[in-house]
Image (cartoon, one colour):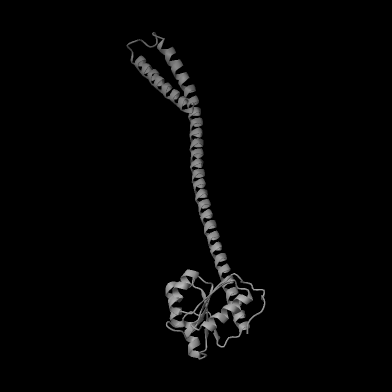
Length: 254
């Protein structure tokens, strides 16, 4: 039974490869697909060319007869497994007159996506094909979404890592600045204290040096050769040394 009109296909541009060593069967399938609206279909009857055709055409779906010569459908499935990864391999819909459970198990175990028994019903063939292609499209979209999500997560993670690194750098700079401020405050407090000490010392030294010079000017009370004068001179000299120290403290404050 052939299909007379377009079914309103969801996947009309799908690449479909038919591999069947029976010419009539292959051509019948080709007509069914073309009449249904599939525009990129190829049929071959020599299974020894199957591997090359699959690599060249990169089909979305392969309709594969199981019982063929010179290479069986199972061997073609194994060739596909050897040539392609599960991510890139086409869907394979096995078609065969062998309805035994063993044949189905062997085909499915070798990677077939589905199984149809001959003689084929054209409508069932088309429905199975549409279901498989739609499933493949959805799976592909999910993979793309997942990959995009992974890239987004990786990008966001990298951004967060960079932001964390920037925050850590800023924190280190803030801590360094804080230490500088603390040190400056300490130095300012120390300078203020030094200024106070210098002021107090200077007041006391002014009295000591003033009275000391006044006493040294009194030669009658403190003769030049007297011990008292010697002690007084040493006192004034020590006062002068301390006055220099006070000046250094003032310079530290400034």
